[in-house]
Image (cartoon, rainbow, N blue to C red; front, side, top):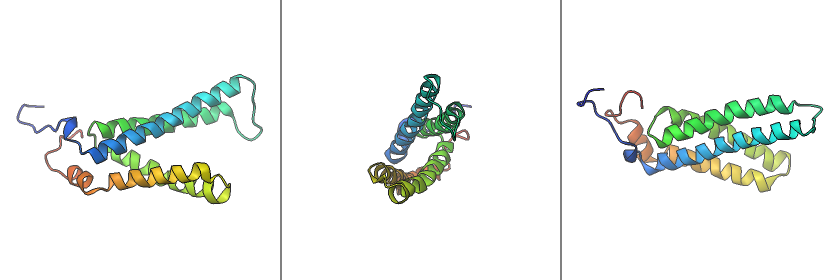
Length: 141
């Protein structure tokens, strides 16, 4: 990249996108923690009849790692992180709904839903959209 190429430092990323990225990274980290717990439980001898603890841990590792990477990318001004964050929040909304209505776990479902809606608001805030639509972002953003 030559010195005449416009580069926007990470500090120019609007706070709305940075906060959305922080929350998304934490959501991904929670997925990674769940993966570790599943592996430890399986290794300790707890076996489920319907699922494999190791297989589910691999799934949580892949998904949680991707979501965490997307959140970190968003905080650093990479536009692709927004897509990861957006999809994670959209997928968490039905999870929250099911926790509230289907399984009676409103104590978990309400916070999950509120956080997902909050991140969606941050992702679609005017400052976020203005920054994302700017012409002077570097090509790898």
